[in-house]
Length: 82
Image (cartoon, rainbow, N blue to C red; front, top):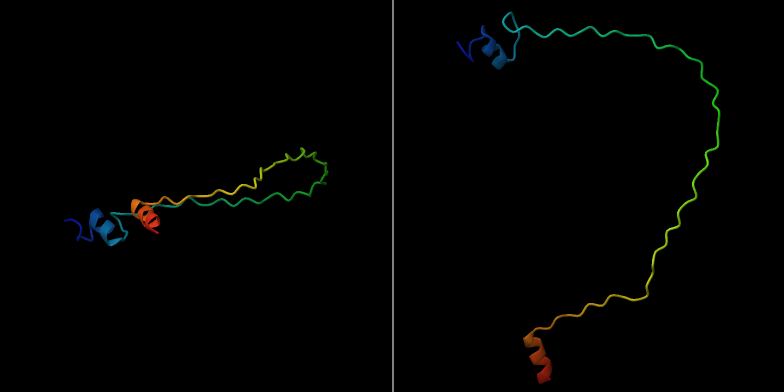
């Protein structure tokens, strides 16, 4: 008696069926409550004071980064010959 037996708990689990040996779990009934109807409250608008915005400055430099190419020994020898 094992996985292939339809009458055992293990067999029911393997087959995915329910029965006396493996009853389904009972769900609790859902209680529906009525929502209270409330009158909309009068909205009081208050002006919120905003903090002054911080000024951010970025440094702009006119200098461009230049990269120098590293030359190998062979390239320097070629230049010297010319």
